[in-house]
Amino acid sequence: MTRGDVIARDCWSNDIIRLRFDDGIITERERAPGAETGNWWIAPGLIDLQVNGFLGIDFQSDVIDRGQLERAVNGLHQAGCSRFMLTLVTEQWPRLIERLTTLRRICATSPLLNHAVIGWHIEGPFLSSKPGFYGAHDPDCFADPTPVHIRQLRAATGKDRVILTLAPERAGAIEAVRLAVSMGIKVFLGHTDASAETLAEAIRAGATAFTHVGNGCPPLWDRHDNITWRVLDQSDLVVTVIPDRIHVAPPLFRIIHRVKQTRSIVYISDAMAAAGMPPGRYKLREIEIDVGTDGVVRMPGTSQYAGSSLCPIAGVSRAAQMLGCPWQSAWANYSLGPAELMALPIDLTPGMPADFCLIKTSEDGRIDGYRSFVGGKEYAPLAIT
Image (tube, rainbow, N blue to C red; front, top):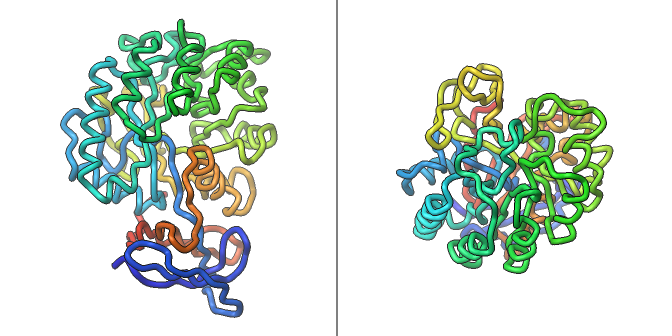
């Protein structure tokens, strides 16, 4: 069913509103002062700019099919995420382009996928080869970016939204940033040990954000000069953050929010196939990844992280707990922030898709339950922690 109406308190204005929708589109929005809400709030669906897989499905697989992609997307909808950037990681460039072309073709055949996948996040292969900075990426596939790479990426994606994460210190990277931006590609910096000067040069060339700040770097830092300090010192750079209490420790998470303006912080899951699944062993490309009972995704036999098992809506609750802030503030970093960065309208107004979540709050204001709607269709909540 993709038609109906809901009454809830608007998470931004605090007004009680009635929202009507038909055929997946919002048809009417009106204030309903005095109506009973039962502690239900309404908020736009979450937007995730970095999803590598979900619910047992690895987006890096060469044998992925429409049914598997739809299973993953249904799981994301169940976890409060209405739309996302499908993420592909480091691979030999021709194979990565082939994989991207296949996924794009599959998505075009499915209304569900065509709505949910708002674009493509290409993380690699133009990353730092320096030990400690490339994480679970395969350094044997790394390359310096060239104009040919950028033009091939744009040709493979048509007019779709694209994020390209790269290390700006690689040979040719600054020129690649300029060309990519001129072709409508968003350039994020990440998995890098670039100097402050090189970061600033990349920003002047058009780079707009930094991928999962506090990660893609060695576990031990130089306390006086490290990539995280350099990034936080760049006032014009948006940062994406994984709010799972694992990838960024709570004290650093709070420091990031004190240093950066709220509109410059965007939450992501960096979810891989294990997200939404029980502990066990999962695939990330050809690599087998262990997920422990603590929810941490690690390279087998090591303490090295390899993506996350975070479900989007759980990230909102964890962020609010770490910051000691209302859930609405954290929700903005996972909806309004990414939508603004990617020029994606998500207003809950007539004519817009009926993509929203109803949030049930406890007496102390915490999230105590939710209902997720995408295109007016309700999705049962995913069992998450």
